[in-house]
Length: 214
Ligand SMILES: Nc1ncnc2c1ncn2[C@@H]1O[C@H](COP(=O)(O)OP(=O)(O)O)[C@@H](O)[C@H]1O
Ligand SMILES: [Mg+2]
Image (cartoon, rainbow, N blue to C red; front, side, top):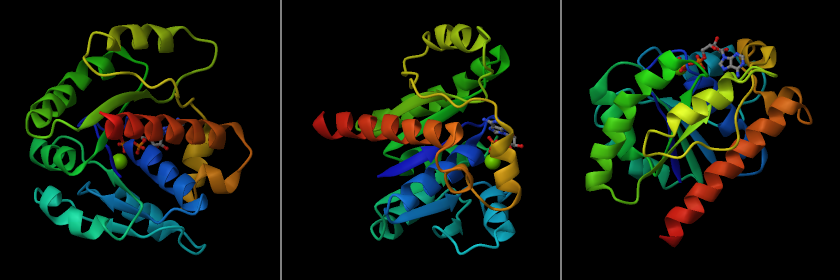
């Protein structure tokens, strides 16, 4: 399965989610590859900051031929996670075409929801050639005891894509762990952040099962 964590908007949590999902699956014994499709190379920087043994390899493939180059490499892995690029539509299109499932992080802010129209349109276009492609939103940086998360889910309902039940809260552990090239499942395996990453992984696996059944 190839999971693209994509959104042309920067700062929504693509790298955070990609790294933590990859770590979750690697710790569960799956063979995982993390593909850094962002020319800024944030996932590569994350792996360079790491002093511990790697949990999974990270390769840089920020090029518009990703969808042609990745399948051969992906065969050697159970799961490939793509950390997507901001802005450039050319790269986003290729990353969407390379994916079985596109996960679109959005923060609980109307600006993020409005900006999501771009990626939703590209996914819709790609589904024209790739009908099995599935996509869903994941809300990131939800703040406890606020209604905005719920409000944003309501606005996202106007898009033709589902919103996963599993959301990620705003938590310092995401930034703190990343600074050392670590992930929340490693730093606090029984913590709440690791639990929300596990719930997200489960939501993605369920989407994949629906896709196989369709
Ligand atoms: N759930 C979260 N809680 C706290 N900080 C977060 C969370 N998700 C992302 N961040 C922080 O927000 C910033 C942007 O996230 P990042 O994953 O780099 O986004 P993107 O890859 O979409 O540009 C980073 O500093 C990251 O540590
Ligand atoms: Mg990033």
